[in-house]
Length: 248
Image 1 (cartoon, rainbow, N blue to C red):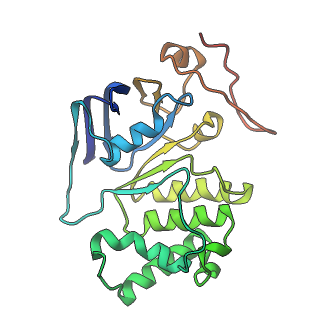
Image 2 (image 1 turned 45 degrees about the horizontal axis):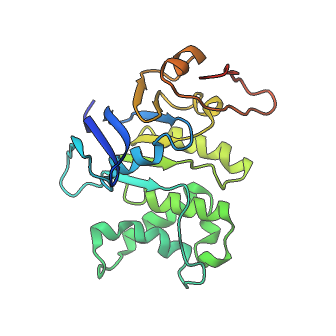
């Protein structure tokens, strides 16, 4: 399987504060990695390292492109700062995901617009295409920004707590969609909900100042304790889950 990127012995942080130390990770096409760990353990910092937004103070990150002008990343942050008074429509927001290929002054073709409309339909919000962002709920905005992250068809989709603002109905649809998308691209997803993501991801990375990669979607409380990765699991109803003991 072709490799998308690799991190070799990388340490990264902010100014003099090292958040992640000696990280090693390889990501291949069609991987589906769930990233778990405590608040403040460095999960979002890891994503910024993957995206190239943070440069390691030690070690390196190597990217492997296959095709010229391909889009390596699509990114859905946990929250997006946006002026909801700005008069931009849902369709225009999604099309803006092509800006890196078009340039600021580039024009969108009829094919670009069809691609965006097809994607909105796939996400289930085609009926919102003409609405302005100020008219949308938090869950609707999350779907729009997911569409924007996907419109350039990236090799790697990076998601930071993607179900933060979505309703229960779309949360189920989201995981079904991610299963489909994983046939087309690799996915790295941060989540606090180990009980849910283990049903969907293929492998798990535990992040708490260090990164411990677990090459399956099944992980025990003893392994989490060994990784120094204390997390909380909340489950409702007849959902398969594991209750973890106290971690020192």
